[in-house]
Image 1 (cartoon, rainbow, N blue to C red):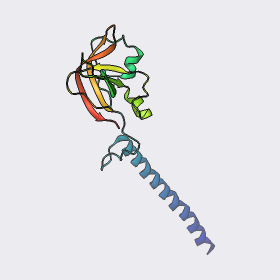
Image 2 (cartoon, one colour):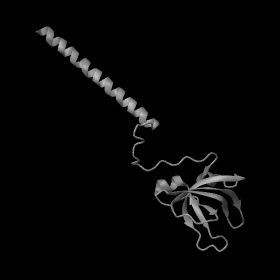
Image 3 (cartoon, helix red, strand yellow):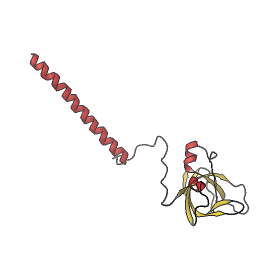
Image 4 (cartoon, rainbow, N blue to C red):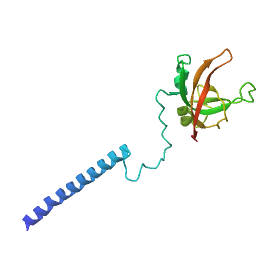
Length: 159
C-alpha cells in the first residue's frame, strides 16, 4: 500500500508540470500571433487610441520642421493636425496652422503646440482636428514662414 501511494504522489506533480508546460506553450504562441497581427479574427480592438499612421517615405512631422525651418529645400511632405485658422485673410482664403500630430494626441488639445506651421492651400478648408499630409514648398517671406501646399491629403479627425 505504501508503494501505490508513492507512485500516485510522483505522477501527480508530473501531470501538473505537463499541464503547466502546455499552458506556457499556448501563451507563447498566442503572444507571438498577437504581436505579429496574424490573428485569425484580425487585430485586437483598439482600447487605448489609434496608433499613429506611418509617415510616407521622406515625410516630416511638424516638429521636424520646427527643429530646422530653413534646412529643407524643394518639395516636402509634412504631417500635422489642423489647429487654427486665419480669420478672413483676404490675400489667401485658406490659411491655417498645423500642430504636430503627436503633440495633439498627447495633450488632447490643438492649443498646446510648441510650434505652429502655417499652411496656404487652395481648395476647401479642412476642419480643426483633421490630420493632414501637406505636400508643398517651405516658403520664407518677410511676413511669415509657411508651407505653400500643392497637395493636401486629409485623413480625417484624430479626435
